Length: 209
Image 1: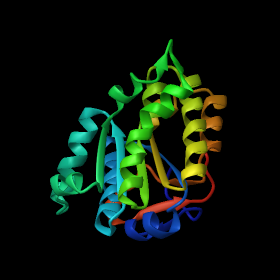
Image 2: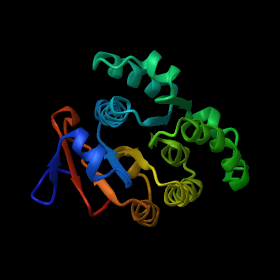
Image 3: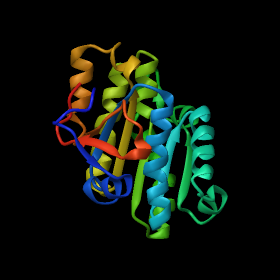
């Protein structure tokens, strides 16, 4: 996914705060560094303007994200204390609603409800990013990953929040065309996964594999 004339450029604050605030955004990233840069831009922008920011990721990525945010001058302890930054371990969350390798929809609703209620109670605008569906796909469970994207899209339309999903390029290359096309179809914007996110975000309104 090289940058070309089909991609537009915007700063992180303009993209996440204006151009894509109510979008379901997809990134297929080439390196872990790019993933953390994208997550930190998404979360830091939200924290600075007072949004409620939710991140669901692996413990490794949560730690790396915290470190990056702190290096950018974000007081993560303070942000967590006043409800602007909510961290969720993806494996712990998945254990609450994956039954026999399938998504139990009622259990999913019960699992995410407390997280979103924290944001509703604070009356802040909500933005969420993470790797629930990518984690399932990484296990080879593309069916559950696709269903997860559908449920997030349904919740996204009902709740009206900013949603950002990130898949590694290596993972995407393991999926079938049907798998990938189904996931792409659930997103409304795409950001580049091979660019330094700190210098700006390359994005497109067309979502392609």
